[in-house]
Image (cartoon, rainbow, N blue to C red; front, side, top):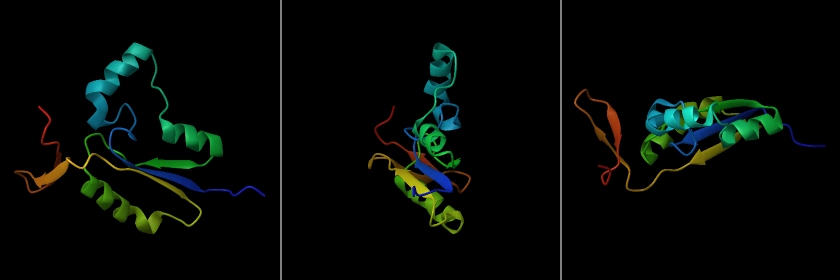
Length: 111
């Protein structure tokens, strides 16, 4: 008998986020306009294949510490029969406190 999964959870940066994600709009919206539709990303494809619920907490530009914080914030909701995919970001991406006391992801070599 095939194992049945309940929910697919995806965490990560722009490689895991939908093209309409606010952190991906600078390249995502022009790509959608060029294609004429919003292409599916791998989480869409996997959840459709297994016919399971799908929760995507990826965000364009996110650093690894913030990705880990997002995972920890959802740990109580993730069940034993769920699938979890984590798309880690580049190690040079860091987070710093901004002027309003919130963390902000920064890619130091980005212009």
